[in-house]
Image (cartoon, rainbow, N blue to C red; front, side):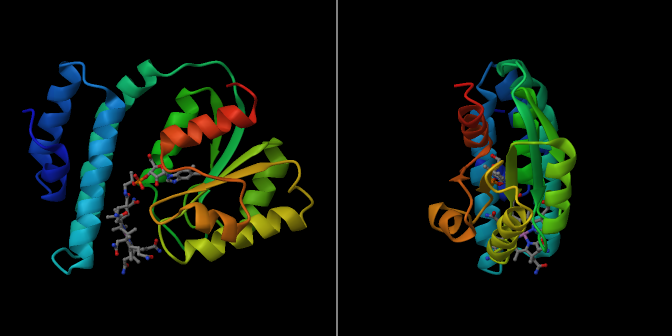
Length: 210
Ligand code: B12
């Protein structure tokens, strides 16, 4: 029951993964640590895909296992977080990219941390971000992306926000598998967050809550 979660996930051993997660939560293990192990497991899945050991259906299956795992961990994460109102947050996976597992974790963590989350979903064109910012008056924007092509989509989204005259009204954070500080600079965003915990602390800093 206390097995190696990252290894089990990377081997796509669904039942063992879920048993391990339930067992760890019962023992009072930190839900964030469980999510970190799951992240490492998904990284291993990605490596096997790169090496040609796994194929697209394996990625889909890994994504499904991760979703089930997240559903089990979510209530515990919610319990661990604070809840005072932090303002509005517009989030989406940028144009051309349909990865949403990481984005959904960010949405969830921002939500339970007190942000009003407006999640635009996946493959979101720049125009939709602009419209949502105008409609909600949100001051914080999150762009998620896992593909190399997402770098340009993020840049185009930041540019569209600027062209709409909203650039000095919003702070923009970027994140996702391949995103780092260098990519952040390329896109013109204000901050890069490595994970959902970082997203929350950046957001709180921007609203002056921490
Ligand atoms: C699962 C998966 C899929 C699933 C996605 C299911 C879903 N509903 O999301 C499916 C099978 C659909 C898929 C499809 C594809 N995929 Co894919 N996929 C993955 C995989 C294995 C895991 C990604 C994931 O969900 N990780 C789990 C989450 C939890 O990861 P995380 O990074 O820890 O998330 C945190 C941070 O990123 C951060 N974060 C995320 N968003 C944001 C936003 C903000 C604002 C902030 C601050 C933080 C933040 O917080 C998250 C939570 O803590 C990766 C491999 C990898 N190592 O990443 C490849 C990978 C991303 N995929 C890849 C590819 C190539 C594809 C396809 C093009 C394959 C194909 N030929 O069709 C398609 C893309 C289709 C498209 N247009 O988007 C490549 C990308 C390579 C590249 N350089 O572009 C990768 C890297 C695999 C590889 N090594 O080749 N994929």
